[in-house]
Image (cartoon, rainbow, N blue to C red; front, side, top):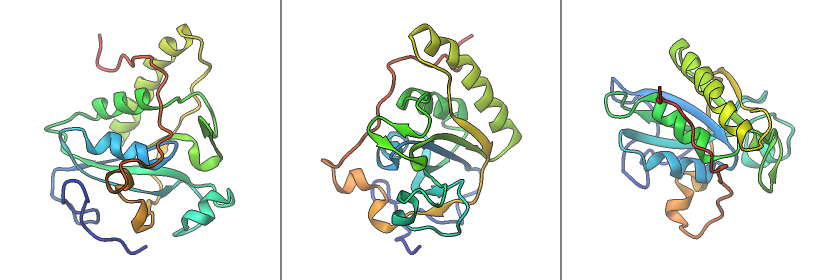
Amino acid sequence: MRITNKHFVNGNPLLPPFPQGLERALFAMGCFWGAERLFWQIPGVYSTAVGYAAGHRADPSYEQVCSGTTGHAEVVQVLFDPEQVAYAELLKRFWEGHNPTQGMRQGNDIGTQYRSGIYVTSETQRRQAEASRDAFQPALTARGYGPITTEIVAAPEFYYAEEYHQQYLARNPGGYCGLGGTGVACPVGVD
């Protein structure tokens, strides 16, 4: 997929190589437009890009992903400086930014591409992601929500989405955003 190597909001690169010291995180939380906007606003996030991951076809198009035949999720890739923002803070934003109990959907968006997922790039990220899930579930249960359906797996290949999807809500401020949380606070980082 050919895309311009410049973040529309902050001007940083979307494509590697990235500066040393940055870490990478991948999150799926429904439509990737709102998810990307959620993360690019966090101080310490260097760059974001939207794309497709966790499917079984190389370099899929948006139309192919939406057909439900490729198994991909719409994801946001987050490059962040761990000296400025902790991975735990990104996890807190992830959990609070969508409803992780809905299976293959977010609100009115239904299909495999709208599932919830954390795609970890290290064993440390895996431990933190699983611990945050386990900490969040009792809070959700207390408010009447069911079990968390978020998949937590090793980061698969990330395929960049088409140019018009990158930083979509910055280019189209009135564009659709189906992102919505549960209103339940995630206790990540709380003793």
